[in-house]
Image (tube, rainbow, N blue to C red; front, side, top):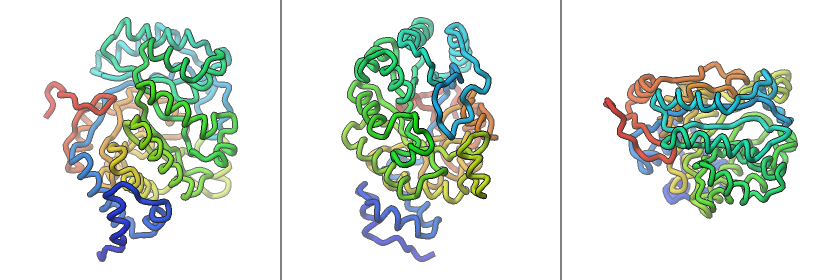
Length: 364
């Protein structure tokens, strides 16, 4: 197949400065050529290892005063985990070899900062070696507001209680036009950026995410990725970029889409944006994560040939995507992750939250 990607765009890709105009051009080339370029950049950036983390998701409550139109998790069961439940789940995770617990919840009406600090300090007191990856920018923003504190002061208090890294969720699409439609009660683009850059400044690394495939345009997706690149150039605080295809089931935005004959994004489109993310973020963020919960295990495996180099975590339990119609399970055993990676022709490597390799026992 004749290569139709112009040489100047390929050169830009290797240098890490592809423009928005050229990103749009890349969406017009035959997908296999786009995937091939992304795969070459992936190999240059991180080699052939495919990483994964042994972790547990703990969604401590579905009680939420938010009004996000894409959410199918809020107030479904109206549950609230006591601190003892969270410690028990952490204990189970540690016994199963987890190196990380990821803790997030809905937005509580009476969000008391001390309660959030207590979760962190209690985990650390009982399991000092487990890495705590917790509290989205929206949760931090909400906590700061409810407790009359600055973002900086809130993050400092959480860090002093044991917070080590933060998920870069609540980003959805970093466009205020889109946010007004899908999550009008959520923090705006500038506020999200402020929480993230403050965390980075205080030594708290974060992930970066993009939830796409609802009301945004392809240009807005590209703007989002370029915004992430811009922040990374200033702070170097992102560990990975995670694309999250929108799940259109059991939520108002999805219902409206389905009524109009629109469904979730197709697999080729998903893979195009995995590839484009690798290309736009090359030299800036080395790790592109394929979410097996969202994509499904087989498409996540294909994404490894389209720029992705990480398959995320074992999760052990996952409530947010599954409540929105994800059918790919809530837990993947390490043995299956390794099998998935090896049958894609690559080498599985266990990592920690900060992408440092872990020599796992009996790893082969």
